[in-house]
Amino acid sequence: MGTHEEIKTAPAARVETLGCRLNAWESAVISRHLRRLGAPLVVVNSCAVTAEAERQSRQTLRRLRRSNPGAKVVVTGCAATLAPERWAQMDGVDAVLVNGEKLNPNSWRALAARLGLDPRDSDGDSDGDGDINGAEINDIGDIDDDDGALEAHFAAPSPARAFLEIQHGCDHRCTFCTIPFARGDNRSVSVERVIARARRLVDGGVREVILTGVDIASWGGDLENRRGLAFVVAQILKSLPDLERLRLSSLDPAALDDDFFALLASEERLQPHLHLSAQAGDDLTLKRMKRRHLADDLVRIAERARRARPGLALGADVIAGFPTETREMFGRGADLFRALEIPFLHVFPYSPRAGTPASRMPQVAPDERRRRARSLRGLAAVLQRDYAARLAGQRRRALCEGGGRARIGENLLVALPVDGEPGRIVEVALARNSSAAGAPLLAGTIVGV
Image (cartoon, rainbow, N blue to C red; front, side, top):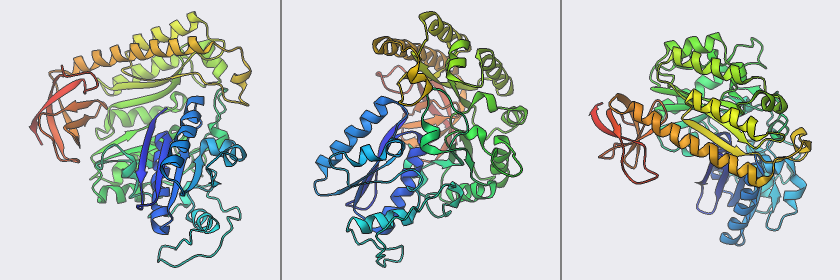
């Protein structure tokens, strides 16, 4: 389900995020708006990717209501966008702001005024307009460069790393997914704005930028020249020689082209870690999901990526217990992931989403969905341990994140004997870590900077 973290703004204002990295980036933008307004709002940035995500959003709402008596509570995000009337009727909700409005500072200013909070603008002046009158930002490129770009690192695990949204929405209609209805169609940030925002992050001390969005592999499909993801990645790296590391969030396997693999082979600053939106490893399941790839495509992409960057770490999003999935179909998928030696499996038990085609298909029993998810997570733990063991004895450059941990390009954390300053890049000699459960699988000794 992704991240679940709190972003504190002004003393009496807070934003709590559920769901994906994109939500985290957007919460950083909201955080900036609230700080500028001085509006003491409590905001829940909800998620709708699964029923569990919605349950956690409701649970978070109730907890914040209890811990902030008298505060004005606003719900935004995908769950609120899909069913705004239902959320607005919940006890303790003072207002709902849908996705099309949540990045617009005017929406927050008008909402705060309507709730009687007497907001000020960025210069501290009161704005008496109490109506939202449909203000929307449907193009994320419309967000001012100052809004959110320098705040994005607050949504990342370390001040040395930052998420940067380059794309929004999705043109595809997978049978299990409601995100296109909550986020809209694909909209890309122009390459000029992406570079400008990335430059501000680098100038602010960020060493690793993580490109994020709903479907970043479709970046550029809506722009006039229709250049693809490899183009914007290459332009970022060319324009920002001081950017140490660039990492990509989840990628649609069907959109990876020759230009992308050529860039992966030639550009060392593009980190050796690819996370694929696989969803399943069985052909019939993939067809019923209305995915644009089959199992053989995953094999081809894995082989091609590893030829381009030997030792590259692969990850995959996987849904366990999709409707009509038999045990044999599930087993074929698990066998594929095992054969491909994918160390990062991000596993979801299937969750019916009202109104989707998959919700009308014959369902796998909930207990069986959970059992299959546990099985895949167990497989993932074995594959990740095996992958870490293969790295032991090698050297890597690692980005210190604080707390005695650093991250190598393959996206594994390394335990350090001494805490490195966050943002410092060091060379480490890797060894297997025999510490307690939950610790990084690798330990590192600093051998150079």
